[in-house]
Length: 212
Image 1 (cartoon, one colour):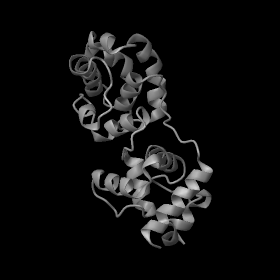
Image 2 (tube, one colour):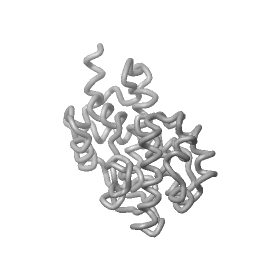
Image 3 (cartoon, one colour):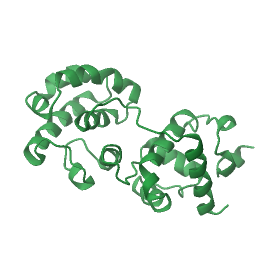
Image 4 (cartoon, one colour):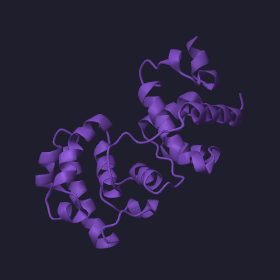
């Protein structure tokens, strides 16, 4: 099967069967999502959603978080993975937002990456989810699923599949496609023992025939 045909069929299936695909992180405005995405690195969305309500209530604005300290923030996120580093990142991020961006979460991917704790993946998430930009955030789920299905060519770095996915998916669908791949990887095409029996796209999957 040609790669173009695989993309066409997979995209069509998701459009028909998952017309709504959104982040599972809970948030009400861009600053909250930025906090949640920073916390979600190497941590489950479920765990992050357990922590953020109290965190958001205590630090509702960049000003409130910037006026705090990593030691104080740590107490609210200590059940999250790598809480010491993330507490430092959150306070540093809030202070940078105020000093360089007037307290507003920027929409530009390069500008976002100037914030502590924000790498390319996090920047792409914010650009995509908040500003509906055609940015493809490649996390572990996207990386695994895209390679396994055959949408990408067993890439070794996240930037390689990002470029390939953006190059093949219609621009208007890229923000949603990011969530299609994440949710598919989270609930169907799992890292261990993928649930091929219930997978709707196995007819176009490069991995599935190998399991027969």
